[in-house]
Length: 184
Image 1 (cartoon, rainbow, N blue to C red):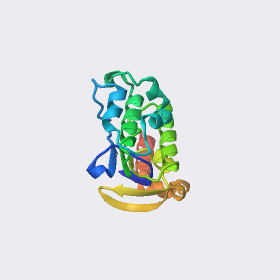
Image 2: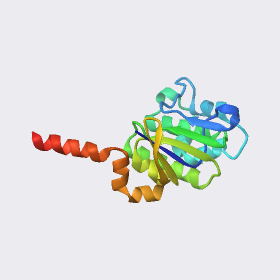
Image 3: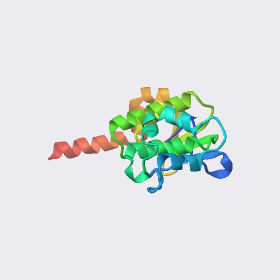
């Protein structure tokens, strides 16, 4: 079950300069430096190297480091920065929090919220962590096996935790887990 979220933000270059993509597995070249990755992606527009270094100060510190020497959080920051530098109108983000330490996730969520609040770009976020998806987004679609099963305003979904748990099948899972735990 995935939550697809729409909002405003930016991305990694794909089709006709209109879309950007932050891939799930970051897809960073291990033999290129941070600076070289960014130079490859840069297109004219609002986002510049200085702007992404302002968004991710850690990348500015690591600008001469090779991709193979970056931590998971730094790799994700680089993937997002690279996408922003293409200056697209739509950012596609595939599970940006996957495998990251909680403190890094907080930094990324904050950065994404800054981009969203300060931009006229659209973001399509695929995220399994419901709390992150709802914190970042204005509206949300819940999909199950490729079909939309619910859509709504994120703040309302955040307030209706019981309904959200039911939509995601968590009530059934919790019932099964409680039954399993009590029968032992």
